[in-house]
Length: 233
Image (cartoon, rainbow, N blue to C red):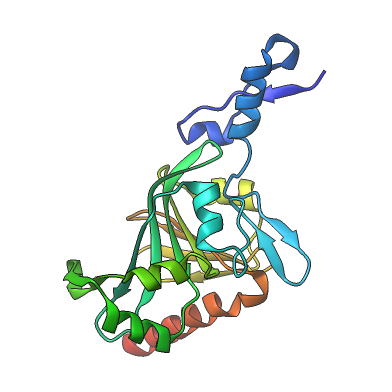
């Protein structure tokens, strides 16, 4: 008789999972345990055509409407425009349960520069956030169109602190590691479409794209690393 995992909320539970016989669990308890073991950040399914599925979503193909069905109906949606940048439309979830791992999630939607410029003209209002970034509230017609727009990037910020041992155990050995400044290091998994940032002084960040689009994550990292080396000379 197979056993089922009883999962703790603390990070240590990610590493040590006690088991009990399934025969002793009620059907409801068994279903709840299985639910907690599904949709975990390291459960990335490879699909045909260079796609992948994580958190029940397929980056590059799943839409905001799909995210509402899988993650919850009420993300905060806005166009964020930082100084000197063209901006991005993001859907923000304050709390997401990815199996037994909780955290914040940001979905960046696949919008064109021309469309974002039109959004700014039609915007209901805009307000400044920290760092002079503008948060733009979209007009109704743009919000309706956004619902069927594909998700380009899924960003997940886990509540629990990760370390290299946990990363190695759960995600495996990365294809490449890129060191950044101030104790930051990127673990790259192109076959999974994942860039996992370990931050010794802050929160970890997991970014997922379709594996066929992984260069969109890797190239900016290499460019930033080259710029930092140039400045250090």
